[in-house]
Image 1 (spheres, rainbow, N blue to C red):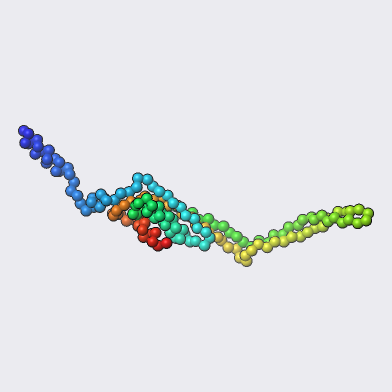
Image 2: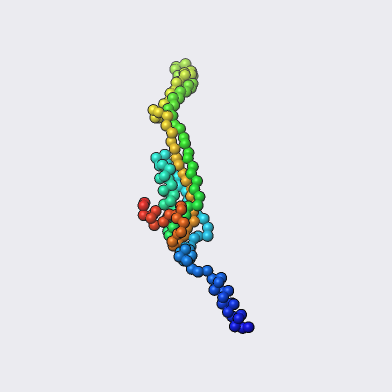
Length: 160
């Protein structure tokens, strides 16, 4: 009875133990952070959308290496574009300006009309576009099975 119980226990233990495959061995070394991180970057009117995204990736890479991780996976990104139009403007204003004149018999005040015009800079209407991006990501260590949206922090940091 004791022998059969021992054999059945060993058999159950062997059947329930999963064999270690290469994929599960790789996952054993993969450690991901338990929380998500967020960085954002804003560009000026000369920066394109791709440059602003690259700046955000660089910030994420610096933060990843600072926290002793190897890579990060972008799980969400939001782009924002701000467009402003500046145009030629001719502005004219009219105002009444007091003039005070004094003589031997006293002073008098008269008002004259003053015309003032102003031309704003630029010859053509132009649009100024500014991009900004916010990315949300997680960090990890070791090899990665699914490389979609995964960036090596050392490679990104080396590009700057």
